[in-house]
Picture 1 (cartoon, chains in turn green, yellow):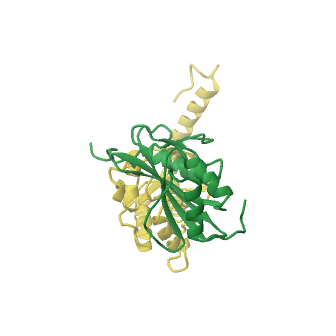
Picture 2 (picture 1 turned 135 degrees about the vertical axis):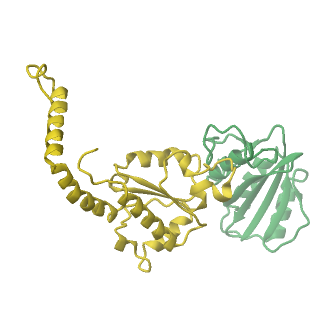
Length: 154
Length: 185
């Protein structure tokens, strides 16, 4: 862990593109102390491990899902306290088989975020210690934040 | 009532029934019951009316109005409304806020744990009918779908005055309920 080393956004960008030349693509959006990228489904766990161990991103502040009707996305916000950078990673996953590796082994704080994403979107996080519903009753059979979930009305 | 066939061998249950009937007949025949009712009904009724303890159970934003009502400006303790934290010590279940389907069994259990006589007040739109969460996938459409409700206080959220008014309506209901009569007619 390099917790005390400070990187600029450009340095983080070049380190990541060195390590993952094809799997990670950066977006052109520019904001101070922010980093936007899209990653492959398969290389996400390696990318997260690299960012945690080599670049000192020591907090996972958000995991959530997005339903685009033709595909689904998982969005991660990782924060580094020492560099003061928040990186957003967006991963596309197929809608008929929404599965992705869990990052709970890296950041314990992702545990309930991932369970909530499963609760609302039905995204299954592999190797999660307890992949169960968090907020809704356990006997619900639908995922309410999916676009095709019908709510209300007889 | 004669005790004739059972006087020799009476079970405990039969004895209680027999003696109760005898007492009842005597009290009624001599007019003691009317006298007792005349004294005890207003007294007990007054006591119950002026010590309605609601359960201190806040669910949603209406709970803030409940808190404002118990503050010094509205001061509901002058009406004998003391919020208690245990359902065993309560007379009124004040449901303030939406009830999710996960909360419903717990709320029903709280209601069952309260000793008789008990009343239920549904405060705010959500508790009355689901309110803004009408037809939602996880909100119960009104408290009266699973526990009997005595007073509805509309509002989103109702002001503390409205809450006090609801309790005064409950006063009127209790006043008419003959709660302090000595024996059933």
